[in-house]
Image (cartoon, rainbow, N blue to C red; front, side):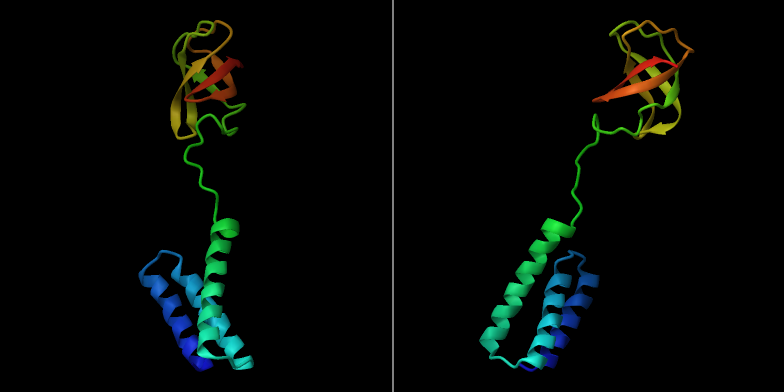
Length: 143
């Protein structure tokens, strides 16, 4: 195959990625484009070209999966520090280690109302501060 065959194949695969957004075809296309440059500079037999294209494709796909791809977190419940220090209004009384409910002016971690617990008794209507996130509830103290 000539170098321009690989150029056409590479461009076709990159354009096909637009129609089928799996984000794999782009790496196969880029491997073909790299191979077109290599074949233009260093002529090689078809079997070597196909082997090199396969190796480049596999390396680029695995590099994407390992290095460039974002790490997906299924849930951030109990792991986020975004709510720490936020001040809210206590909706219901809280007794030591008995849950209540706190309301925030703006949503925190997807909700403006959260179940809450405290080590001290706090009356409804008091301003409270988040000191820890534990699963689907927050630990509060008087602000």
